[in-house]
Amino acid sequence: MIPILREQFAEKLGWIDEDELTELMAIGQSSPGAMIVNISVLMGYRVLGFWGAVCALLGTSLPAIILLIGAYYLYDFIRDNRFVSAAFRGMSAGVSAVIADTVVTMAMPYLKRDQLLYAAIMAGAFVAAWFFGFNVALVIVSCGIVGILIGIMHDWKKKQ
Amino acid sequence: MIYLELLYSFCLIGTLAFGGGYAVLPLIQQQCVEKFHWLTMTEFSDLLTLSQITPGPIAINAATFVGIKVGGLPGSVIASFAFMLPPFIFVSLLYAAYRKFGQLNKVQDALSGLKPGVVGLIAVAGFGVIVETVWGGGTAAPASADIFSAVLILAAFFALRKWKPGVIVTILACGAVGVLRELLAEFMR
Image (cartoon, rainbow over all chains, first blue to last red; front, side):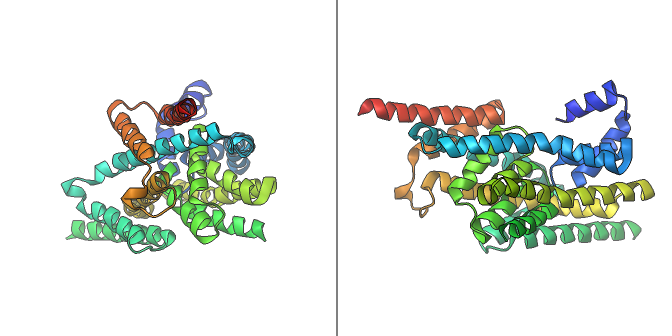
């Protein structure tokens, strides 16, 4: 998706230069929600202000919403069929593997000696949610606060 | 009433969905399966399958799916836009702050703590899906395990790590294996 954005907006339409696109991508990744929608919204702001952002939001989300509504009705209609439900069982094994693969890939950068603090956050979040059943929202907010505290600690060390 | 619950639930999910596509899985599981009981674990894993094999961000796909299931067409629109509203506001504020100050240090700090935490939470949601696939929502006792699904998960995981065949190819291939097995069972009888 990112290469498509780059080609369309930076190269073809010339609305934005590469450096600015990289900056918008950083902001988009720092926000919650779907990154691709966020970046499109930022592009909308950049090109046309608020209404540009609204148009970008609708433009990137409506096709996904409409397609999924179609897929849902199809799913609802055929899922009781023996072979379809066998396919879904198989696919859910595939999805399990994809999530496991994603988790391993995402965890890798934290499993290094200089990332110990962040590896501890990762393990802590896992233990809190899996073994103690802590509320997911609470865990996310706590991790953010710990991140800010680590940042303050780094700043303080630098000043010393 | 159901619309208000959808609105509340997906605004909350949208507010906290930091850290990429899969970050919404633990939130959706907590809100839609555990809190409001809109989905069973089987439906949750069907939702993931549908989100993966249709284009568009998983988070929006998931919101649309849950919305349509519990509130019909209006529900799907409400859930999808409720999910997108908080990120839209957040992006707008960040953009304004960025234009004014040119940097986002505190936000970046918070994110550097959030991201590893979210990985841990995605692992929890992933375990939930694996347990559901292998044990079908029953107790995780070795005796009741579905060996076929367990082997399929391991094979797919191995293939993903080794050859990186892509998400959709992997999922569809697993679906095809599931159908083949059902066909074989048909012939055996």
